[in-house]
Length: 367
Ligand SMILES: *Cc1c(COP(=O)(O)O)cnc(C)c1O
Image: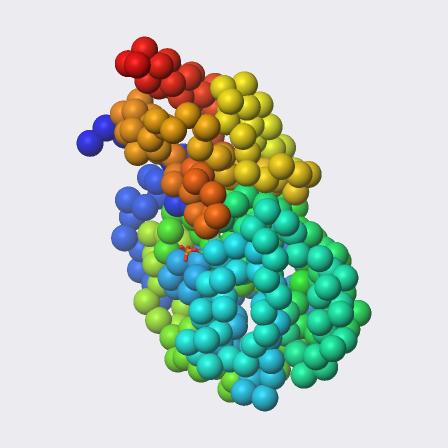
């Protein structure tokens, strides 16, 4: 099969060196392996700007949604209630998780192209004193919007509630001072901005709140507290761990540091994103998010006015020339998405946009 680079927001294109790490079948009970897990956990705390006295990192098997489900089903007790703040499909997934697990919840739903308003969250919390936890997505990968998690977390902390952030597609690519912003549980996964491969999610958790959650879990495999208790002894995973993914992730973390850490990576992503939007606009494509909240991770573009436009034709054309792009996910408009995270540089954006321009010319000439 012809190889291509991924312009999708995870899994994403990783380096050869990260992929090479997976050529080793590592033993799991061995000390070297447990040390790798411990090193990853402490490295994640540094990236989150939190101290190991107050926070801890837990790795959880499965994709990102498993991490979200683990937190929601482990830390919210039967007599507690969750406010889900949503403006996209990933926020809606939290509603589904809560519904499946029988977690009592309220929903504050905002339009996909608007960020949730911290003032409204304040009012809802004041009107509903029974609410104990608030969950919200940071970078809504559905649209590409970057929500103001800092403002919302401030309101949540003022009200004395627990703040849960799905920072799946932003952590590592956008700097998040987790403790300063008042985030109690942050969830992300191996195959997004740290640039590892799929296989586990990770949770940065306030230790005291995690300890308080003992016995609340509704699931055995996704029990966050139990996973932490085992892992915290010496780095041993509770059940079979995704060994190859863990090795690749450890390498990806070294490469993030070598690049210059989160500041350098977020600069590269933001550059890619700016260049992409500029060039797409030159060709007549309009971004769906038309305000300053367009995030640096992924961009949703509206289909052009031209009613002959076919996304699947463009997708094929672009894929045959080395890049995979993404269909849209917003409900009220015809859109497609282009991610700019992973091992992607300006040259890739230039090259992608030349291919798209060529595609438009070919279509124009066919008429
Ligand atoms: C990728 C992503 C998830 C998790 O998706 P999985 O397919 O389970 O890995 C959750 N939330 C957001 C915002 C995401 O971008």
